[in-house]
Image (cartoon, rainbow over all chains, first blue to last red; front, side):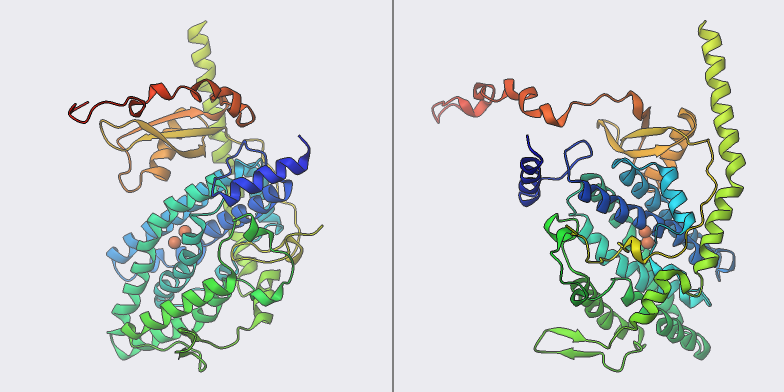
Length: 315
Length: 119
Ligand SMILES: [Fe+2]
Ligand SMILES: [Fe+2]
């Protein structure tokens, strides 16, 4: 069969909502796009543990510490589900990790911002996990089977993440004057970076839109961002706090909230590696990898020894 | 032809990336394992996903941490991925062809009078 027929068959499957599985024929660009996107998603889960990990030893109570540990452990799990999904497309785990450490592969820029106070842990759960959930719920219907299945598992675990974050802020918002200030300050600092998580505006690109046609994505950045703004603008009322945007206003005609312009210079600066914590994050990942080398070696040697012993017994 | 120009959430284009330091590579890549989990006594084991581990014992322990953090399982099977043999999707049409034209294998094929119950 000529390649064109394969492509037509492939597109027919997608149009009919038939999932693509690892051994199915797929266009090279579909494979590449999925590898890039899934591995970046995996890296984001893994690097995303760092800003929160910063507060595990400083959580204000044993209960909060246990919750935060569980949440961070979930994120490690999410990274692993996603690495496995990307591996089904033919890239090895080690290659992916090398690309992260070399700076070739990216991760979500949001994790290049620092966590300065305990309220940041609340703001991350509510805003950052909240934004991630918008994207991930959409991705449970993505066209590549292993990615979609990983997303279903992840979404089941995410809702606790957002709720625990909101609850942290809720407690602070009803606390002392200093706690209220801390709560508002965290929201102020995380709001705009959270909006940037959805990526550049739709109008930035005029090309034919292959990711939508292949149903890797089903909603555009602006659609997802708008859904997020509409959700948060309502939820913040319960906290009695304010979003740091003078232009945020309900638009009865559009039935959506209008909001102000994102600082795209900042967005690209952070993507390019010039955010407040880019260096620190990558260094932490590299160090963890290097310091774990002896453990990986020891485990491999031990497994080899056991296998040899079993062979001896059998002989 | 350059298709992918639009940048989506969670997909940052490579040409916008930063530096390029090559990190060290180790020779201890652990093998890949497939994980099957029985969620409840009485149900089949079902494929849950895969993971890397040095040996079977470690694969089971990792599977517990990765796939059963919320009591999703009462039993775990692991098997090294290289031992899984799969049918080929390219041959699916001919492989399943024998089942195609045997409608009489389905109960609905048989037209019985209405008064016959419980059948
Ligand atoms: Fe996650
Ligand atoms: Fe999360």
